[in-house]
Image (cartoon, rainbow, N blue to C red; front, side):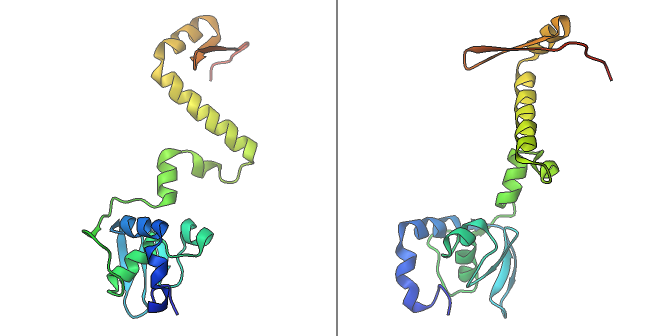
Length: 161
């Protein structure tokens, strides 16, 4: 028994499920095993009964990957234009793009990850405000204005490496 058997048809008209169906129209279908009714979509292992994505593991209802697989197997029809888009990234790829250092800190404690994230954000802020660096080089004081509030860091005994 799968989510796509006729007795489960009511499930697919739920507003949340309709959103997943819409999102299923534009995914990266990497491979389909028609004999096993499974595939790899956006890097996730998908069948008609389960998917390795976070959405399915949390909700235990069909995710967009499962809807796309069912469409490819011609047992469920998605409304609208359906395209295979290799540029669509899965959740992990999106996170790595959003937080490029996150993979390097996987073995770190929560506080270490938090410090790394704040350093990364500070680096971005400094790149956006080059005059701050010039002032720091002259005074040894890093002054930033964040949300209208002035924040100062004083560095002493810095050694060049």
